[in-house]
Structure formats: C-alpha cells, structure tokens
Length: 228
Image 1 (tube, rainbow, N blue to C red):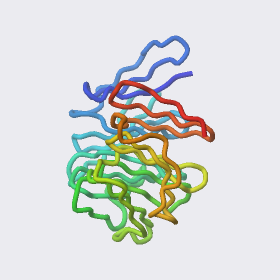
Image 2 (cartoon, helix red, strand yellow; image 1 turned 180 degrees about the vertical axis):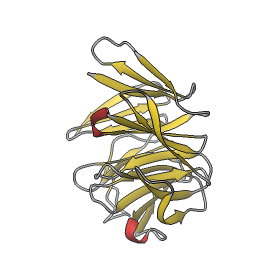
Image 3 (cartoon, rainbow, N blue to C red; image 1 turned 90 degrees about the horizontal axis):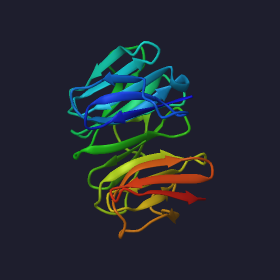
Image 4 (tube, rainbow, N blue to C red; image 1 turned 60 degrees about the horizontal axis):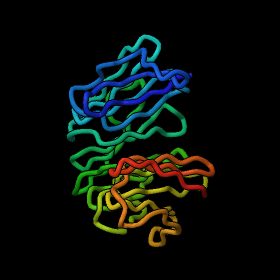
C-alpha cells in the first residue's frame, strides 16, 4: 500500500510506501508552498493546491498533471471535494470561495466573497453544504445553490480557523490558531457542544477525524489522539 504527502516548503508531492517507508515518486508540483491535498478514487488521482494560486489534478500512474485551474483571487489556502468526487470548493487569500468541477475549466456558479482571508474549507456530508473559516475566526456555512450569502455564521474567538473536518452526523470539528479544537453544529451555530483542548495549547496545524478517533498535530510538534 502507499501514502501521499506534500512537502509544504519544497513545493513537491511525494508518493511513499506505507510498508517500508520508501519514497519512489517525487513530483515538483508547484512554484510556491503546497497548502492542501485531496485524493480521488483511492489514490488514482491527487488534487493539490498552492500559494501560487493553482489547483492541479495529478494522475498517479504516470505522475502527469492532467488539469490546472488558476485562481484570479490570490493563493489557494484549501480545497475540499464533494461526496461525488468530481466537484470541489476552494478558498483563497483574498477571501474568495469558489466551486470547480473536475474535467471542466473555469469556476461554476456564483462565488462567495469574505472581507478577510479564508483559511479553511470543507464540504459536509451532502451535495450542497460547504463550511469555510477565516483568518479572524469566522465560521460560515453556505449552500452552493445560493452561495453568495452564508446560511449561518459563528465566531468563538479572533484566532484563525486552521482546519474544518466533518463527521458523520453533519457537524464538523474545527481547529484554531490558539490550540482549540471543538465540535461545531451548523444547525446550532452559537452552541459548540464539545471541546477537546484549550487556549493554553499550541496552534493546531492538522486535523483528522474517523468514527471514533480524532488526531491533531500542533506547533509544539506533538500529535494528539482523542477517543470519542
């Protein structure tokens, strides 16, 4: 079996073996830092996003770039696939959230514009709902059928939203730059129901959610595992 990671600083994608730790494939993917990855169809294709303003689709079999989507709204901070595996949303340093379709050039539909940088995004477990977070701690829930205005919004603090990861219930785990990681329910936006950490922790950089476990990585170089 194999895994995929991005070296954010050297702008490369790497495909490596989970079994022996070797790295047989290195792809010089972007001209600036890689900010986000998504995997299509169990690793047949990879989507990468970068500060250089591009979202690219890579075919893993021959390491070819099969699509390239430039952004006119600054660097791309995050991308997230919809459940259909063919559409995605992206958020940028200029506060833009837009929708893309794999296999088609250009953006689809109306964009959402936020007055500040958007730092994270995630599709939820349906075909229409997107959540986005800003550098100033705003969390917006949007319906892609009318994306120009949020359905709901919430703000816990002024710290940057670093990750948004949905769970099976339709809620999402959200991490911030102060080390906080909490469960956010879009239908009850003013009531975060569970918190895993506190403001005395280092800022959370990475967040992964399974059915019973949450993994976080932070600026203190510690990976923490929580059992739900």
